[in-house]
Amino acid sequence: MLDVWFTREFPDLPPCLSREERERSERFLREVDRRTFVQAHTFKRLLISHYDSTTAPGNWRFDRSPHGKPSIDPAHRYQFNLSHSGPFLAVALADFPVGVDIERQRELNDGEALAAEVFHPREREWLAGQGCFYTAFFRLWTVKEAVLKALGTGFSTPPASFCCEILSDESASATVNGSRWHCWSRQGGDFHLSVAAPLEPRCGVRYFQVHGEPAVSPVPAAETSDPSVSSLLRYASTADWCS
Image (cartoon, rainbow, N blue to C red; front, side, top):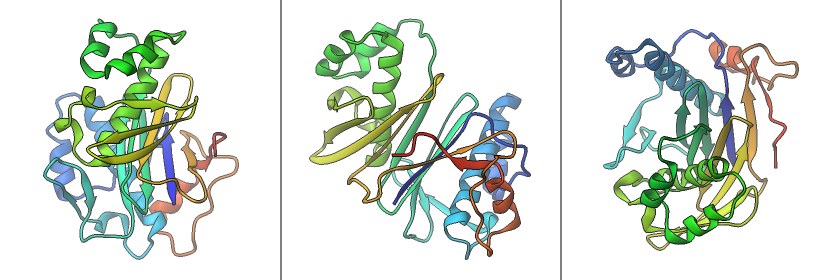
């Protein structure tokens, strides 16, 4: 299983955070950053309880690897990863290691210099041959970051030290430290979304979008769903991108 949930505008739902997460949220100086943090971690908790309703959203506990990758504590059959950029949020859930990255497409002060710093030479060759620099840049960047997050090392592995092979408009692959990763990408107009995993799921990648207003055809809630999970699913629908 590999499911990816994303939103351009998170619905106005009551926060669901642990004490430690609430304390972290209070350290943000800007209200917009605090709000994004609260929404992202509420989103994460509600989704995990959607897949495993035996635990209420507020009761999940999490641990971090030495490089900071979060996981459910104690070890659980599901693994997850979280990403946000501006108002965009994404959560990937799978029964194997997974990494996800979502990025708002925007102009960069010195995009070519940044590309020279973070991309492998063969990636820069691919980038130079694309029609739109920024579209290609963020496509490639989300793939690389999703791989590093799935790997669990983050930027302790230099992003320019490995090469991602762009196989098509939607797929890519990479070999890092002897391990092979598969990547899937989608573009939502003003954002790019990529997810990476060590194997291809049998049923493909499933995508779900959470809307700012209730969805016309919401994702069904299990009868045992927590009320807050059911509230979230009222705003969720299967995305048009499903593979």
